[in-house]
Amino acid sequence: MGLVGLIAGGISLGMVLAHGMLPSKWFYLVGLILGLPAFFMLVCLPTIAFSIQIEAGRVRHVLFDRFVLSDFPVSQFRRMDTMVGLFGAIIYFEQGRAIRFFGAHLGILTQLRKELQRLKREANQAIEGTAK
Image 1: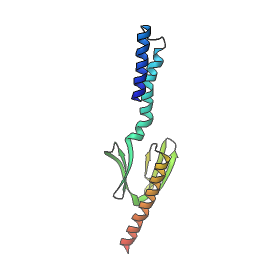
Image 2: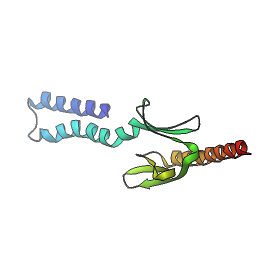
Image 3: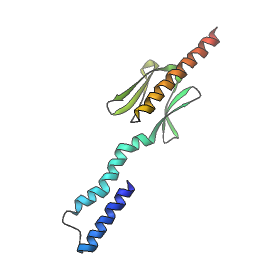
Image 4: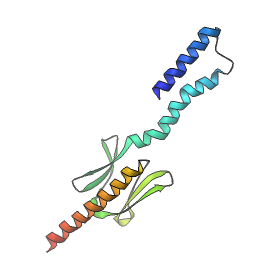
């Protein structure tokens, strides 16, 4: 996106140098220079800022790979719905708790669902094994 702004800036500089002033519809150009990066940030930033991490039998919803927003045991995983309204996916856990996160590639979401189901089976088998 920075490249698009740089190109648009170069075009507007060329117009100023060629005509000695900005054209009468310069605000369209400003909208292009500022609007595209702003749109990109509104659409893409949530998908970049938030992530799902699976570590040590826990599912974590993390902001900027640093701040844990929610944390659930894999054994409490119930299901995952994709393409739900504004959200790319919602991961449901016991007691009605959920992790909602924005877009991700459907292939990645499918892999995440399979991995959560596998880890839940393993966690339940480990719990059953210790109960015997």
